[in-house]
Image 1 (cartoon, one colour):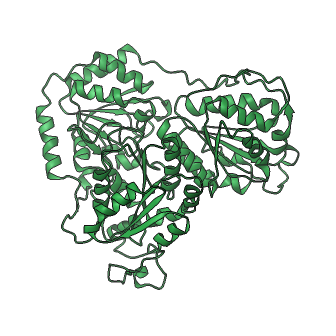
Image 2 (spheres, helix red, strand yellow; image 1 turned 135 degrees about the horizontal axis):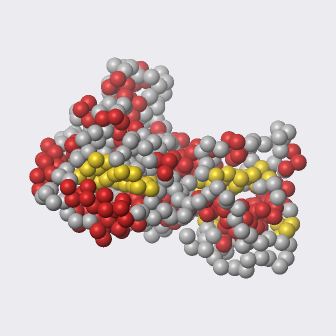
Image 3 (cartoon, one colour; image 1 turned 45 degrees about the vertical axis):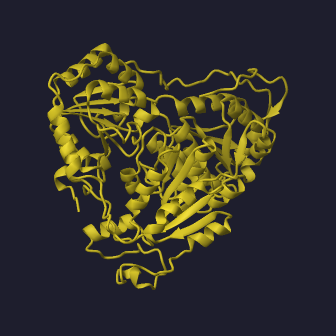
Amino acid sequence: MTTVTRPHTSETFVSGADVVIESLVRHGVDVIFAYPGGASMPLHQSLTRYRDQLRTILPRHEQGGAFAAQGYARTTGRPGVVMATSGPGALNLVTAIADARLDSIPMVVLTGQVGTSVIGTDAFQETPMVEVCRGITKHHYLVTDANDIARVMREAFHIATTGRPGPVLVDLPKNIQLTQLVPDYNAPMRLPGYHPEKRNVRPEQIAQVVAAIKRSKRPVIYAGGGVITANASAQLRELVEKTGIPVTMTLMGLGAFSADEDLCLDMLGMHGSVYANYAVDQADLLLAIGVRFDDRVTGKVSEFAQHGFIVHIDIDPSEINKNKIVHLPIVADIKEVLQELVKSVEPPTASLHDWHTQIAQWKTEDPFSYDTTFPGILPQHAIAELSRLSADRDTIVTVGVGQHQMWSAQFFKFRNPRKWLSSSGLGTMGFGLPAAIGAKVAHPESLVVDIDGDGSILMNIQEMATCHCEQIPVKVLLLNNQHLGMVVQWEDRFFKGNRAHTYLGPVHHPEAFGKGDGIGPQDRYPDFVEIAKGFGWHAQSVSKKADLESAILALINAPGPAILDVQVPYQEHVLPMIPSGMTVRDLIKR
């Protein structure tokens, strides 16, 4: 990341809080999402002295701030920084920290803490954040000596960004923030057990992969978020151009390979394409690059890709053979491995014509589809229209969690990396809106759209205030079906349609018990248009198919933050679907 060059030491005494903020600037941080409180007040006072170098954005909830920091990090590759006070403020960050850990997102998380003299006494707003976060951070610190601050901050950024990225917590007692000291910003790091030096791929490993490709007749590349994290999308595309190997991607990997390419198989897994799942099942060679073999991709793991030779390339040795035993593990930097493969690889000896023909047939027979004759607006259609109407722009899409997330992965065309932001490992509702804030702050010239659901957006709807007050013009395409749609789908498929607290309107309405007309009330609850207007947003609703295109264009072109409330039916299911723990042979198409 970009750093700012300054003298290694200060010649005058400064506060511990100033050392923290100066360290941020030295590490190239240009924005911090921070919510103040008693234990973090010295840090906020210091931030006011750095206004010309560091933008401070006030979220309306600490979780919103942390997801905004994620949005910044996911679109830039640089660490997102968030800060909260002790106790409830710090605890409100926990979900987003765990989310970042599972999706390998670099973050530096700063929390205020009660004074060192009262730690362990159950002081007001005291929580043991290191203990709370021990299992969900890449590393964590409780700073008890102000002279350690500069070193700890160096280590935090180093750990967050090297090897497999992740969140690092720095817990800062208030008295440490107030201590006066002469800092040494070049103090050596003390990380005796941390060795993230780039692992070099061995020549014999490259030779083995080259040989496997050469003898393959049905190869598939299975690309994950690790490709994007390694900034290796260009090298992946070069490899495909040289070999003709089709590519499927995980939810985290979308954009690593362009959806416009004939060799793109789109997403695989539970709600992935039929053709991707068929191809992986029939492959005689699977190049798994930057992936975890997680359950949503593999289903019954013993039967996943059981016919092929599996190569697993990843920077993190702990992922090798964790979920799926592979034939050739390679622990190395993905970008380097792909660069070496591009230099050495040759197309398979046997023509891949038959394999390409088979895949093309699967694509023709079972594309992602929906009922185009439906008289109203289907959520899939709304997403496809947004994709079409924004194709000529630099568009970044964030999502909440639920059906709309899966439909966005299916029907929005992602052509480049870091344009798709999804809470994938943890699946956190409420991710979309604050993540869009961080993305827009990092990329003010881009169109940033949160495709969200009426259930998910309510989890962090207060961040509408942040958008208005901080002048962050994100857009929201709200797919409003009055239900927790994904849970409804599972109720329909596996619980005989018994409704169990999935209707989001008034509890006395017949729809709450699954006894309504299937359409729902004409006046939907809540009124998102009026809510948005109350926050100072542009807002409109659309329910007629003929009005959708003009409404989306109005959303895209609105001068400030804007929301389009799209009223859609709740009966739609995300298909195809491989039920949890099952196999491609159990795939549900309709």
